[in-house]
Every structure is written in structure tokens, then in C-alpha cells.
Amino acid sequence: MIRFGNFAAALVALAAVSIGCGDGRVAVYPVSGQVNYKGKPAAGATVIFYAQNAELKEPGIPIPEGTTADDGSFQLKSFEPADGAPAGEYKVSIVWNQVIRASNDPESQIEEDRLRGAYADPETSGLTATVTDGDNQLPPFELK
Image 1 (cartoon, rainbow, N blue to C red):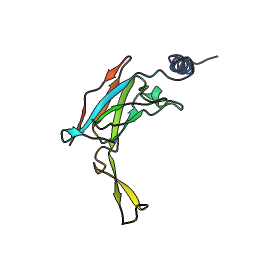
Image 2 (image 1 turned 120 degrees about the vertical axis):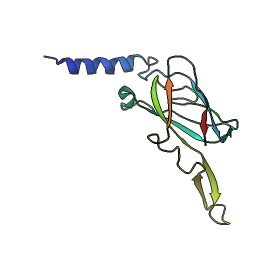
Image 3 (image 1 turned 180 degrees about the horizontal axis):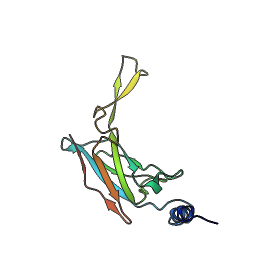
Image 4 (image 1 turned 60 degrees about the horizontal axis):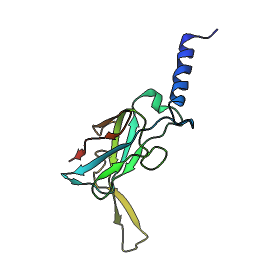
């Protein structure tokens, strides 16, 4: 005898796989946006979207991310460059690393977050986004 809870869970899992591109992947939708720091583009920042929907936290579901261009713009990647992200609610983290020299030795370089970790933790960054079916042009993330 099949329990309703198990049956419902199986249906959700089947739906998640079936909404993909026919290759077993979850469907993704184009996502673009911009990151500004103190009103200016944050070139080279890494933007990572962490799903809040339980079905998007399953194994095999990607964590979408992107890197900002010189003008601060980004496009998210889940499976392939600029393919986007699955539809859902996200908490967002942003890290903007810069290379600094620890000494005169060019091989001795380390990276440091220009934002000092203020937006690195998606739980405390205060940044959120919603991805919907279709093209998603997000409002800019204005960092201070």
C-alpha cells in the first residue's frame, strides 16, 4: 500500500525532472542583473544565488552563479554560460575579490574581499531575488 505522503513526494520529484529540457535537468530561465558599489559598477564580483525552495535544494540541482563584467552586469550560469537559473526564491551572496601582493614576490599573491564579507553570507547579506519563467532582468544590487 502506498502512503499519500510518499506518493506526493514521488510526484514532486517526477515533476521536477520532467520540467527540464528533456535531458533530466531542471528548467532554467535567463537571469541578468547588475552589481554596483557606492553607485559605481563592481567589475569582477561573484554573484551566487542560493535557492530557498526545498525542491531546488535536491542533489543535482545547480547553484546558479555569475561574474560581473566591467559595467557591473552579470548573467547567471547553472549548467552552461548565461543559461540562467531555475524559477524560485533565492538568497544572494556577493564577493568582490581583489588580488593583493603579500611581498615583492609576484608568486606570493592573496585575494581579499573588497566588501569585507558584508555580502558573502547569503543568510546575512540582506540580498534576495525571485526568478520566474521567462527572461529575468533583475533590479541592480546596490551595495554600500
